[in-house]
Length: 493
Ligand code: GLU
Image 1 (cartoon, rainbow, N blue to C red):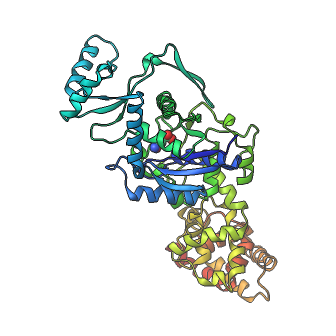
Image 2: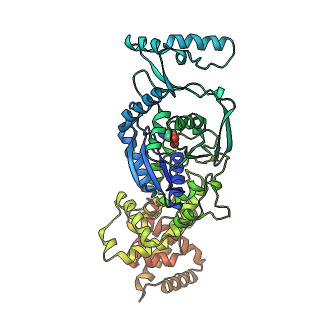
Image 3: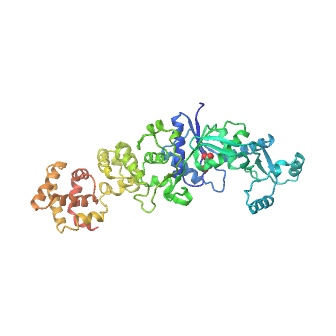
């Protein structure tokens, strides 16, 4: 097989949404798997709807995901003259023709068809014009579109899609479709094929909604004398109500950017999106980039549309629980140095960052991340749920207050006593703090759990978390003692 060349050709009319990202990821995996090339092509021929903001969003989104391309971005609009030239060549070679029919004429014919309850299809009036008739119209400056001339063949155009199998489309069902508008603008179907030919694309891997265009595009390849690529149409990404996901109807909650802003680790999102509609053939659900590239094949693509569960009303769990769990898995298991690089911008945004975390407090910073990540789901949790580790002004979860503080009248007094015990310890370690806590509980004739839960609430603001004595050592004696002494103030906040 010659070099594999695939493409991701988004129309830049909105942000990169998770359906588009999934298409890009499959193409990228396929290229990597076969040592081929991935081409990024911006299909920006719809000048009115294309925006530079969208182009930036697509490029930033792909870059953030780690989906790389080998060529491009190419811009479709740079090649409009070439698309027109291809159409002219098709006319010259008899594969296409100029159609001078007016809109009114076509509308009238369409209405006749509708009245007769038949399917309207262009009746090829202009395909039958003599060369004199054509010349006369041209000389009169009559506007025209260019239509492809569907070959007069019996039977069906057949091709084998790598996912959907053999597809037959009877020739007589295919209309002589327009490839250039009367204003000279080439249509998308033509531009897409001409670009794929120039970019030497060997495999077209795209959404199943492209399948309706494929027979027409194959006819274009044939007419242009080019090798037809392999087609693989992938199932669509549907919302929980089974409607096709689009950025316009679903808003920002389906964009890649939203995941980025909500604390996702790029690879966790890639891993999740790949599994929406593809399976490795075994039960693995967590795959490294290398494993995924090795396992990827078009045969693993599912025909069934993928349902993407998300919940825009609950921002903590705004997406599929599977996605959140994958993110939590990566966050909890990735090398802590890598995690530190991802947490840094979160802390910066929250005003919790200090350069010391990359200098003399580096070791503390890494130990702290390793300790607190075990219950976290997204990168946002570090600055929110983990705020008490990085700042002294942290909110206290009302549930924690209710459970661990409010029920116990004397808690502030007890925690004040505990603070003094901690202050007097020769050494402040996991062992000594635990011993001091248990001794005080015994003296007060209360359960150690009361002191432990109360301390957790006051010192971290959270109802749950890592083992308390690990927390105390990490937060440090001075801060712990100070916070316990200010119990009334902290929980009253
Ligand atoms: N620009 C088209 C889109 O965004 C690409 C379709 C294709 O892959 O051929 O849907």
